[in-house]
Length: 269
Image (tube, rainbow, N blue to C red; front, side, top):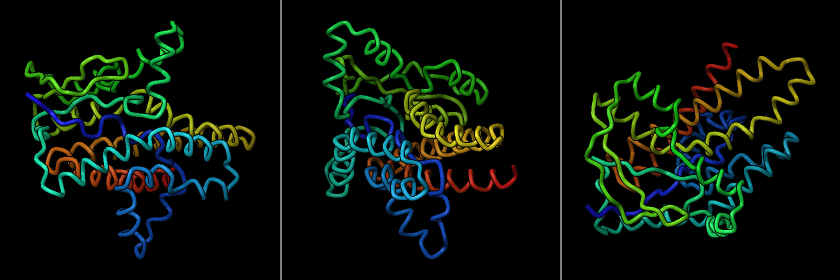
């Protein structure tokens, strides 16, 4: 089976997890949701707020990740435009989900590949950990809890990772929610979640100085979990039913809904 290379890495690498939620006022929500469907905008939309509130470290981290992933983001947008123009898609979204990657398709992919060839241990460590959550012990526990079973029907793709190895597309068996969970975990990378968590470190550090470590740690955990899940499930639903366009729209709306859930939950703390 020949599949089309679309959305080849996790798009939630640099999602902000702070005051972006406050932008969702009724008069602005339509425009905000529309902007969230554009990957480069979603990555950078809260940088001005970060700078305004003195969170320079987080702002620089978000800007760096947005710049690194710009080439792949543009390819994702092109795939969506191709679908809009009626170009036949070869990826069977309704049945399969290929693994996303933190590095594949990014601006530093070739450089990192070179470091691996030079025998750099840290580069090899990054490659070994460029996994989806579905391939981690944590992800396996989630899949087991929803009784999602990986099908033996695995499809080959024309996609390769950043050292040239074949990337496959997977199918899950079980309830509709179980299948959706499997797809969402395949779209969420271990390093992507770590990157989002690192953006929360400055806020936790400030909380330590103010004696609110536990409270802020809980809030940060809620932020990371809610927005990661929102983008993962939103993108999985969108890709399954709407292809490349659905993937972009689903991730955008998933980011907004995840943020809203995070905001409401934090109000209870």
